Image 1: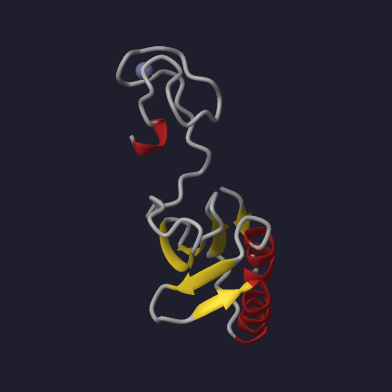
Image 2 (image 1 turned 135 degrees about the vertical axis):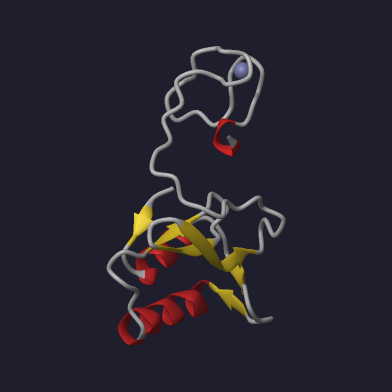
Length: 122
Ligand SMILES: [Zn+2]
């Protein structure tokens, strides 16, 4: 996942992946316009700490990563509400061999080409 210093940058990417979001801690829903407006307001009124950053999931969910470790997901993509979102941010995990079957892995591939093990879940 890419990292973003502002919510607006994260929201702009998310807007290319999904069209509506639900907020994590309320029943509020956002469309693209609403999300971008909120992101802009948040960036100007409540900027995040230097060590924090935003992340965007493959389906367009937006999270904030605090202290470069734990991810708190703010917006869930309504396209994939049951998405299996990671709770921590891993900096380009480099796994050279599948831990299950020992096959050399393709760089940045999520699954082992031989046995299908989810390499990001390790
Ligand atoms: Zn394998």
